[in-house]
Image 1 (cartoon, rainbow, N blue to C red):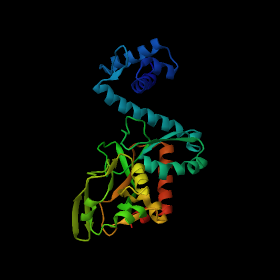
Image 2: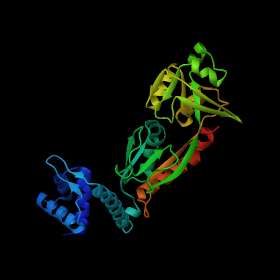
Image 3: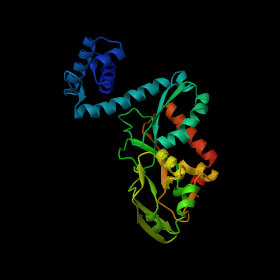
Image 4: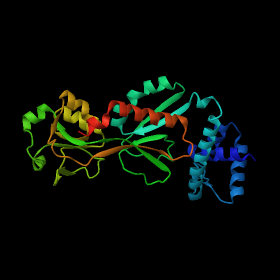
Length: 304
């Protein structure tokens, strides 16, 4: 039995959920696929997949083995790419995930230029306000605002830092007045992003002063663009990273509130599998993003 085919079959079976779909992907018969899988488990002397009439599932050992096999096959693919034209003209699908707001504002607009430079690379964007598991979801690159990854196999590289600021529309402030202190926020309509750390508790600092304010939101949502839309419509005071509302502040559509106070800042990181040989498509997009952010001085604008 071909060991490479065994590993490919096992990975496809784990991802597709059925042996028949895995066999179809490798263009082999179901009988041959069964023999390959049985040979792999016999050689390893362990059960990797639990079989039932509806869908296959990985055992605990099978899950660990899948993670290792996935990395191994990716490295083999990259090794092949290093000796053919893929190194000169990179190809493949690059899967990137980020929050909906970041994907809309700072990834999707860059895709045309990136694909002009590297026409062989297709880009798949997963906009989600939750963190995908990079190892299990075939993610090439994730944009995140947490400082570290629990999985030691995930590498992190800083992209930029941003302030979190309060802002409201001119119409809201005309009706309700500008709060003169952070304590007055409890009397205002607050628009809160629910995925923030402790969204209803705000830890303000100004020099040596530190104040914590707890608010009851008039609107709470899991998407930053919904918060922004509500604020633009005059619904209240939002709390958002500056990378989302910078253009609104510059245009005067939103006005800063209590801007002399600071909230804990966010670090925007790039997270990716820590491999000895990073796929060319991932390395090129990381370099492209870093250069774009440096050239446009986003961090300087977002932290002042």
